[in-house]
Image (cartoon, rainbow, N blue to C red):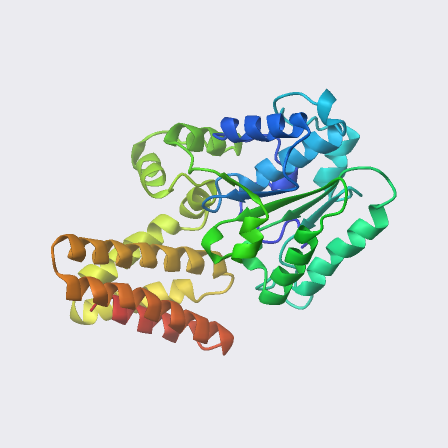
Length: 342
């Protein structure tokens, strides 16, 4: 597994190879016009929820810049990449000498992506710029996502952003920009993307060969997909709808029935190759608890709202500790479920 395909969900197309983007025409037009003006910022921070097309937009814009290296001669809009052009082929294969994609590296022992983008990865950017400094070409670095930079890596990126090389462009992606160093945010031009509309989400899924054909499945995907292709794929291809149903059963049941339901759900979430669905479950659980806290607050029960809000933090801490010390996942899940039922 390469870094370009690590973390790609079943049914998805790696952003570097994705020829289509849905729902972000205004953002595309902004980037194209900004580049054509010759006054575009050297660092663009593309913000928005995970799975709505930020990385695909980043690669589309990189393709646009490398295809039209003279800003004044560039079109005022982004087009679908031409799969037969040398630039598109090089980007799709990860072989472009003018584009560097910084993401979490793959652990050679496990074949999985590591938990953070390290300073060693950022040093690749320094090497990249030194190798290409004499070509006169645009040099583009996509940081995907910057949320995964550890502290040392973030500081190293900051130094490059403070004194960017000539004809260098940084495209910084973030699912949660509030977690970024304020100094990184301040050196980037922010471009916020919104979740996809139901229509655009349906088009994106159809483009992946998974058209929504009405019925209960479409209703669930559109209501719980949060305008995110990634979220929809987890619902469709990873058993997300079944996980939600099982969690609802845990919450609604009592006594021995609840205990059995908890163990069934914990067995699924702690099984082999369950990382994606486990992450999906944690996100759903957080949403559930936040909704309960909000309901309690609106009802005027501030102590209950405070308990639910604290529970979100407590569960996040449990997960952090369990992962840091490689604790038994099933027991951790059972503990979390027990806390959520209170």
